Image (cartoon, rainbow, N blue to C red; front, side, top):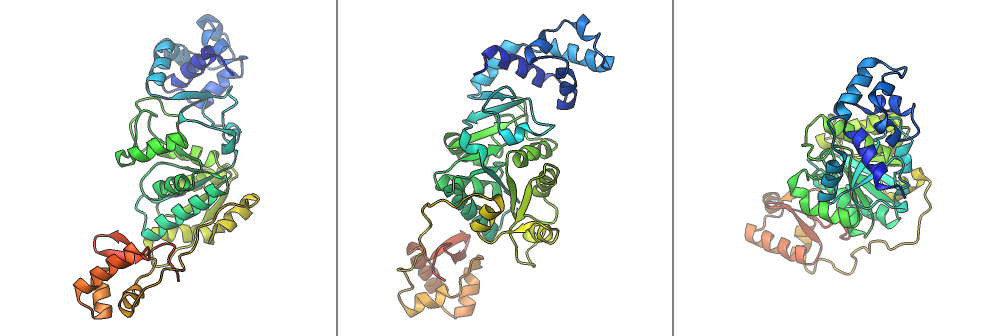
Length: 369
């Protein structure tokens, strides 16, 4: 277990302004430890066979950082640090040339996180995309796979929720400081993740949700994971930036097929055309990861509950996996609006239908075909 002093020095190196990982690696190559580099006198540093502007920038930045104060800020944020010297540092991430020197963590990283799968996609998820991400994450978590995503709305939230429903582990990699939750709508989800996994960031405390930070964050999502699954993405999507990182890192890319008329799924279909593994169920993912299937519970299909009469059956037949507006059901069945809405309410109570938005319904995900 590393000493607190070492954490001070690693954090100090991490916080030097405008001094990236490549520059730090050049300096660290000349020293046995972060402490040795941090404590080296300026005169000695300037004798290294390195560009003088780089050395001057390092010395100036080092002089502006109060190590004790910065460690106190981490503690006040309810976070801990995981550095390259720490055994908890994720092994897959450690192998990357641009891995962070320091990770801020709320929650806990464990040995169970050696088997991670990333699930990403659009923030504006369709009902189909949300269900796909949620169900696959739940089934993977049942197989003891840790689900990694980015805490965004849409597909990310669906994936985290699926893992939590299964009682599994999930890691949210964020593009802000660990002391900020973005988007605020996911504050409750963030707290749940901290109790069943971890929230992770390489960004300094207080970092705002700036657009430039999220592509940098995306390399950690893929870097933590054995493979990357795109559950739903339009042709232009931030999720495709994560795909680029995954390819550069040698990770497998998987994608869920979508309706060819759905703009939110065109990115997935294009990925499949370009060679991504097509996924239709959790077995496809486990086979690709070469992970043994464990004997765990599976979701029981609803077979005993059926529409009880002709009216319920007629309304139920108008529903599908995609949301249908009440007005369309009225037109197709020629039934009064009040009759349709009351029947839908009964079907919802029986677990056969689900509300999918204002005046919209679909079949419950696990209802009988």
